[in-house]
Image (cartoon, rainbow, N blue to C red):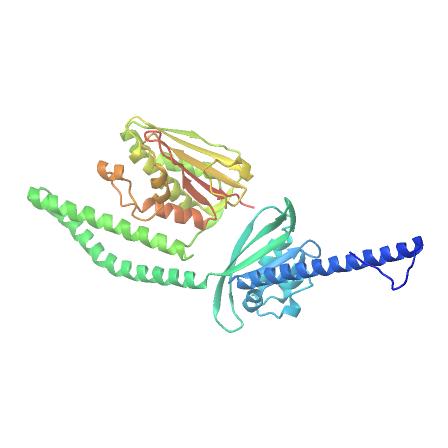
Length: 415
């Protein structure tokens, strides 16, 4: 409110009142602008404090420029990539990439990925790379980018860079330790297995029944331990990113048909039927054919073991292009488009608690223990590791008892 007064009697003219009204409105607008500036400064300070409190590198991009216009970066980002703040703001995303201290191969990969990702893209993108910091130590970095929304409208895009060097270093140390231990243990184990096989072959029927029974137990136990060591090494190598893959473009239905043919004696021994619903028009996936065969073999072998005699096992494939086409129980962080493979049996199925633990090493359900079904609980853990190194996902669907087990996994299509 603006109050006006005079020390002598005075009648304000209409013109004077209009002038004072204009002055009052101007002062009101100025006061409001100051309040808004103060609020904006507080928001900016809070946003800056929040960004700096994050231990990961943060980059915010708005529409405009090549790949987007850089709005802000935090100090962790500058430290991670050896940059100055003056070189990182007010430029395009691709110009920023040229300033980042990363290997040229990494720069080329990121340029291809980021240039093909519009700022308004609603999808989440992720990747990883290795580099040597300007201070001379190696760094393993995972990054992902996601859209930033306001009232269902994409305002910009945020990029997060997470240093995973400590975790990867620990995984590599575990892998080397297990590899060394397994080598030392497998050498005497091979000797035990070889001598047991020699005794059984050389003595024939001359060996007493009890001695023959014990020798067969020694042979079977040595084979069992050898499989356990191999599975443990596979899991550790996959977790450490050291599983070697010979990738090529393959047709998953062909792999499934081959595995079903090889396991024919197993499911026919239990008078079971394998029913396949495979899409021949599926696009190829870029994968290691031997590893994919191992995944399907593990899942089908499990279905055979846990299905009753004369039961049915169902195998199906289909292409998933968008998240809306996924089953309800599917994870949300999938690479699409992908081929979805489903293996369903008529066994007892898994409840919610079992479904959460079934991919953990050495986990076995109580029903499996009571039924004394062969296995140590490493097959599904190995299967998950193989699927994930192919950028796929595997999960199981909890069901009511006696409703059957359902396992699903995705492998991204070749691009």
